Length: 409
Image (cartoon, rainbow, N blue to C red):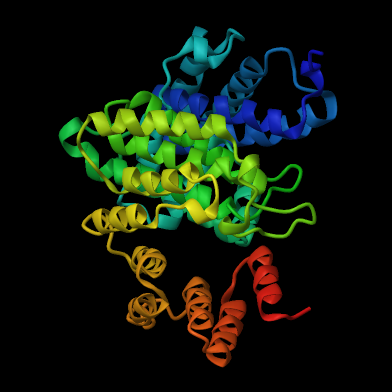
């Protein structure tokens, strides 16, 4: 049965906005030479579209609808500035924006240059994340603020400051030349990874942002246009492997299920196969990086039919290969967990305890210590560590799991 295009659910509507919003904003920005006006014009069009399409249904040509709405908004904004009158008239007469075809048919795909501009190192990390989700993905300020539990006014100010920085500093909307690309690409991939992590343990409510889906869409955009960049392929593989576990991540009552207890028959094997193929393509370039290695770690878990069959020695070896690329305390903590599976809880606890000062406010450090202490029969210390992990746990799902572990209601 074919779904009625005039009554698409919110998820499909979000996909329509995601596919077109950044494309229109990039094209308008190039045409006007004004990133701020272009982005605001598209954002206004998105807000209008979300309200109108939910009420009346998605129009037959949503791309054309959104393009024309954004163009009209841009013209209105330009006319309110005396210096923009000439640009407004030029835009009003631009045939590329008076026809109602999909913007993908009217202009080249310039979302990747916009993504690099939004992730420029001159911008604060939190501003890069917010601006990318708004300008490239098409989320509204309200959706982003709710997703990150930030007041909407605070989030709006971050976006305003970031756009002002792009305009004042003359940050170009272009993909860096290959010799300068690696460092800038890492900024883009980091924002994409953080987007996924932000929604990893929080299934979206109806009408709210689906951050994992948005992150995978961004990763596909980058990997599709930079197919010779193995780290872009590696990140996409990593996110697909993490997303493959999503059907088993929560039980029927909505409780978080740890990896070791998940029903692996529910994992999405199609996503795992796609990720394996991406990793093979990345390996062909012989330029190993942190996202490829993290994806390889996730692939080890995906390859094990049961938790007991996990190849922990291979995982420990991969962590050793990862350390020259990423020696962050969280990576060291995860390596200690693998060490515990290979060499025992006592060896692992020694490694974990060296990280206490740097990760004292990280709930998973205390949860890991609690598990190792339990294995060593030090139950009183384990309980104290679990209580500290519960105090610091940021998500309700993790809090519920810890309460179960320590026998609280």
